Length: 308
Image (spheres, one colour):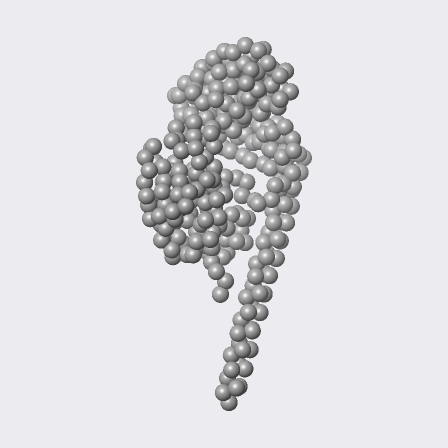
């Protein structure tokens, strides 16, 4: 019988310098838990959103890929110690690893290792990757800085997020943002790229007032943006071209239907290729298992015939 892969039931991401700074973490390595699957081994063990998994079964965890590999190789039913950082303290939890049910290997969530990472879930890297969210950028359309853009906009640290458009009457517009501003800091968090801006704005709540440092025409200034009710209803999307200049955000009405269709078709084609590859591998494994079983049956028959 084919061995089953282990399943823990957490969604994780790598602990980066920016994440450690933003979440005020002690550790600079490990797997950060973004969510816990209901009724999973992780939930039963007491793992919580915001924990950082430092050790798994006595072994140090460097990043999310390493934890994924560890869980995948664990025999279902095995109880392992998991050391986590929670609110700057370490705790040791015990988890009985579940078995990954085989049907999930055929779903479009190709993380069949019991530990999943943030979108995209495909192992492939399509030419264009599309993401969407119900939260807005509070009227900001932004993109990451290239080296040339950083020089053009006279950004000292060469890092930040360039404002390409400001929606009228939005929170950003009321705060005084202008196209051409480069966001370099939000509160105490330094901004390296658009991901930092997105994470900080998604954490903001109604009534919050954010202190945002920008570079405008080579000079630094601080804008105060108040988060108002109802401003987070505008949908936005962004796409990422792997060999391009980075992430680009658009309001949905800015992304033409033809381009949007081409992007989605591209992703779907890659998803189908990955599904075909997965099916081939599973079919090959199944055939090998069948051949082994047939060999055992033949050997047993020979033994019985010898007895006769």
